[in-house]
Image (cartoon, rainbow, N blue to C red; front, side, top):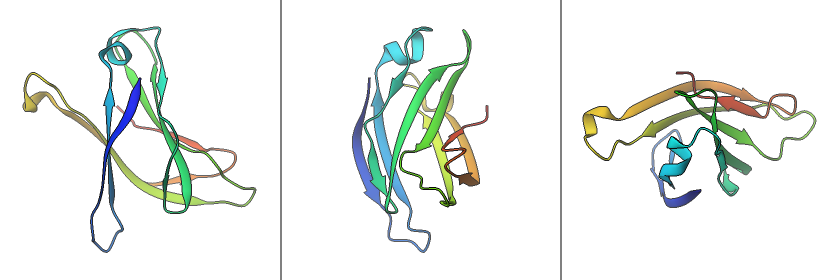
Length: 112
């Protein structure tokens, strides 16, 4: 399960929003368990995040645009940070800039 825990909007020129999700351990450890967040709105669009096992050792994290229309072209910068509960030096971050979301390609994966 992946639940929205906190939303923070920064008053900067980029209109930055920080979404914090709590993901259960079973999503990160169980190779047969995938999870998708409930839809959330930002920038007049509906979004979701899905966590999918790509193999035994890799966890794919996708940002999905839920409501693209025929001619929608939406560009977004995003960062996924997985926090390690044991020590902050083991945190992992994946950043993508200017990712293009369209009706044909509504999901973008964080590259690992």
